[in-house]
Length: 218
Image 1 (tube, rainbow, N blue to C red):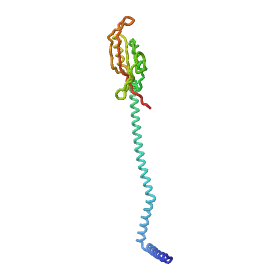
Image 2: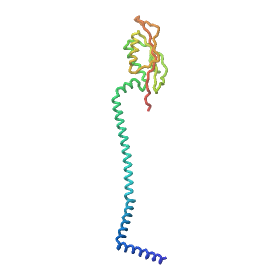
Image 3: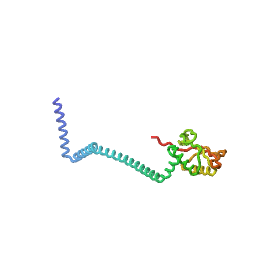
Image 4: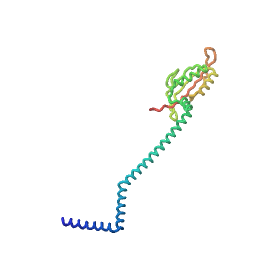
């Protein structure tokens, strides 16, 4: 086995020395080998240096594109929020009027005070009045009713005494209220009542709904 190894060693040694002699003596073989070595060096350099670097650069470019898209989306959202804020500031007064006209809670006591103000203005006296399920004066009414588009309405019932001019003025004032009353029935009593001072009084009966939207439940 040792002899075989030595023979192989001597054979390859002679071949290598022969190639080395040719490399030194022939310029064309020398140039060819140098080209092969240069190509091999470039391939090794590409595999172990340029390729990972190129992959890293490609990943960075992709990440930058993603960040640019995110920045573009955020800028658009900022523009939309700015436009919404400008629109809100422009329509703020109208929004407040709308919030007063159609509030997000029934607030019957506040609504009742508005009617009392109109009664005092027109110098009228209520026989009975009811706002929502809460008893204010007279007979209580039924609970709030569900309406279209998610709206709710609590019932309002009024019985007022006065002369024709006073009652028509009262109806006109109700019609011009910021928070409207949607009447379901309006009627005048055929019975004429005499007041303490001897003037003839009639009874105005109004039934209707005060509309509101429930606030968002958190």
